[in-house]
Image (cartoon, rainbow, N blue to C red; front, top):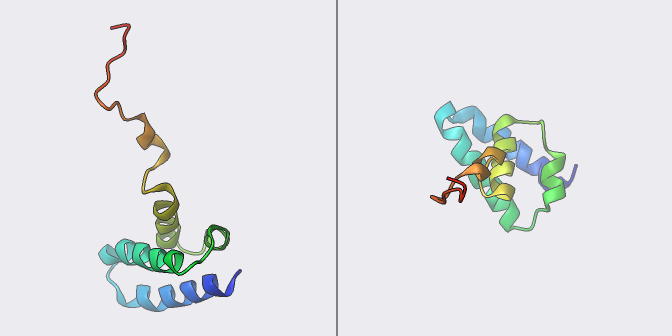
Length: 83
């Protein structure tokens, strides 16, 4: 694991301990965003997978624009032509 990934996990461990559960997802996203903006590679984030559920979710949001796989099924108001 990259030094940046290790640093992020260490910072997260400290921060998560003092945050109430309802604030952790937002803070995890902010930290992942900061590290990504500072140049941390996607592969380094991927190496962190499985360490923390909030960080995993934040990584997904960072690289998938917050869209889950099933969100692509949205209709956009278009009707099937067969109807």
